[in-house]
Image (tube, rainbow, N blue to C red):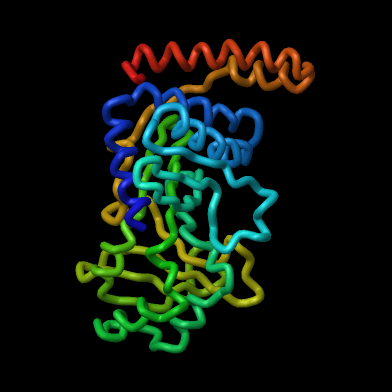
Length: 278
């Protein structure tokens, strides 16, 4: 966890000093929505991993890939290695619209049943503390989620990290809510002492799929429990040339790809020079 925290701190500092580089990368990522509504999510994993490799010299990143999904012991999309300390940690990358955000699928469906064993409305601080110590919540603060939150209408993105420690410290009430707009399964919602929304655990039974269960929050309602790595919203624009590049690349040979790759690598070197990166 400390390795991840250090990376996020360094990532945030780098972005503040080199906003043009992350803006270009985010523009390219969300241009992928012109190709398909879900395409950007998978390509964001590759893009952020390469961004780290190209520009953040104290870190190295490896894209885990979908072929290892079934063998994964935890949710992860990329592995990051600190080249100085040799700390290694996994990161789950999420590309979600501004609003509901899944922090964990709760793979073994343990969180909801653990809460069901308690009361339906919990105010006792000692009980809340015991809940967070329950093995079912062991991963609550160990999931390294890096969310790319986007607002498609305004064409802007905010890389926001959920503050698990603050959430655990400030939780003053956990209550079950059985009814809700567009929701057919119950949830347990977490609130702070001022009644502000923090996060929620969704139904974990057999009838629920991966998007109906697990640990969720809301980037609008739980804004106080996020830290913006990009220091707020970053405006992006669609790169239509990239769409043309993809379409042509799909019908050209590897020889053509090699030629294009040389030009792209040269462009990256030029971007580094303009940014005074050595």
